[in-house]
Image 1 (cartoon, rainbow, N blue to C red):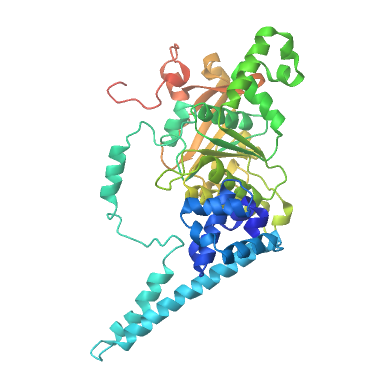
Image 2: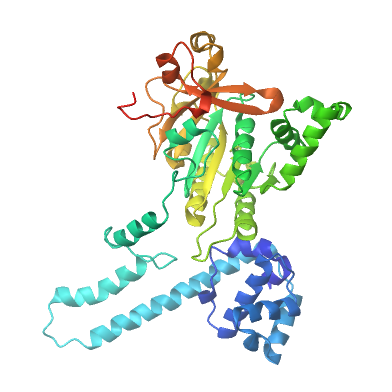
Length: 465
């Protein structure tokens, strides 16, 4: 009834709890599957749509009986409060768990009934313990601990048949990709932190554009700005026309700029770039938005694996004071990054999360400089700091070194930037653009110039050095 009334919004809320097998009645199972097929396609649950979905699933003969059609009609009219959906879903899950437990106890009882008296006490205890241990250690997907070698041959065959130059999605910044160990990987959350005004939103939009231009779907979840602000930034980046001229409409007075902006707008329409303004929304609602986007816009391949996509959260902050009960703000941020990480793992997606640096981040370059530091560092895959350069750094690096630097302090899959090294960037605020240059070490090794920004490989072979 909740699916019939609230559609995809209801399904996203309960999908991690309820499965087809949660229902015991075969009719309920096929009706549930049919409802899900309708709402995933963003349809409205009515008799024709349910029958069409059932036909796709090959169960239309079951759904189309007079009894079931009458039952579906009753469900569509049944009054249900959305706030109760999760409570009832969890209640159903408990009944499912109890049924499975009952099967286990019956299995134990049968084994005990068949003892001969020749068994040791340990063997009898094992008849009780082992089925319970096997049952309790299974997770929702039925996976169990296994020897790590069990799937190694299949894994090697997969990587051989699916060779690639880079393991993750490219940020569009080759040096940064190299530091991460191959770009933004699946089941990972890469954190970039900065002080206000340094370029958090600019780097997030640049990463989004670099991916969507390659046909990779991107969801930008913005917890602060409006969509108009992104229009100005994205169009400025793509057209080379300053943001303020786009925002004020003055670009229309110059034919060349007008044409450039219109071309950028046309290209933007062809890019799979989805935007969600999440300002003021509860964190749970934001996670549901991501799930809904994955289901509707991204989809899965024939093996059920989520297609390539990237989620960007700009930026992580306390979304609702009502969600804090006897915990501090940094603890709440820790729960948010943990849930984001769990979602990335569960749905096998790549994620970039922006955060604020506290005041210590102006002078320090440690993981303690990020707001809510400990828990954010625990659950992120990589942690980088985007910073304005100090006067000394500007003087040492020279004009070709840019005015921003990116320091990567943690990278689970990559080498990080160590011993004072960093990646140079040129920040052009009026065009909402960050251009990756060479690294500091490369600049020191080539003080006379000749370095062409991001075309330089971060790590070279020893012979080439």
